[in-house]
Length: 356
Image 1 (cartoon, rainbow, N blue to C red):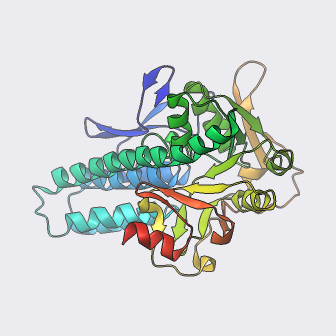
Image 2 (tube, rainbow, N blue to C red; image 1 turned 120 degrees about the vertical axis):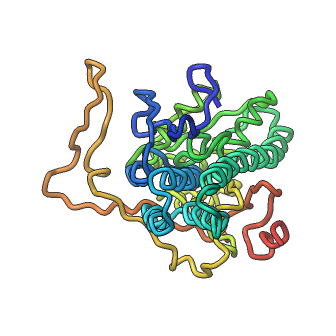
Image 3 (spheres, rainbow, N blue to C red; image 1 turned 90 degrees about the horizontal axis):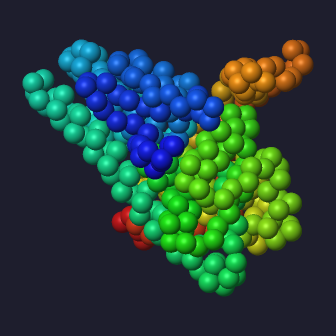
């Protein structure tokens, strides 16, 4: 997708360096950052210079390529894989990508391992882009149906950033939006700011603006009132981990949107690639929920009157806070799952129909 009219992917490999768009700098600065070591890749994931389940997975895959360039030794590669997996615990794509890479590299001769690793990392990226495009084409059918009935602008609510900045291209939740926009369907997106890191305000609104998709930023707790007033036609969100029974783990606040949608009879869809499905965990209580540093809650970053980026304290210094990054939306509140293979009900039966 585009930034200032130029096409970009979120991550690419160039001259033995991994290039990323540093998402901690957006929307006020556009910075392409170099990752030269596996430690750089791990740090980029931890501090959220890259974020979004598919992009985290791709970064981990390239992280292993960098590890091989640093030290073509199996024990170093194994340790690097462990460190990458532990860098962020909730998004399943991270472990999926590392496991896929390590399986591909098992038993490979040292003189061929770099080439094979690089090709596999590139394939993971290419595959994600194709999957996200297919997610968009499948989700487009839902938006098209709403428009054909309404004959007016389709109002879509989304939470956090499940856009192209969270993937390699297209995004998951935004892919149907971009495809609808390209088709000429009049759409408008309600963008939750998504405290505490404001990924909706900083990233989703930013990328929608760059693609000239009409959107309006709203405070996180506004969605329910908009639904009550009939101003939301459909909710589409992403997923960091979807269980085989259809339960969805996504950015904190997703569950409350699903409850409001259910109460107001607003369709609530989750868009995800198959790499986000966790077939092993059966009970959502067993999903590791990341708790991040409390400073993300206590401080805000923005531009001052001199156009300089500043961070300020907004809470009393003595206040304590808890910063849980994700919540769980049970399958019963989800209208359907939009995947690269089609749309299914959020259930074991629905998922197995597509993926068995």
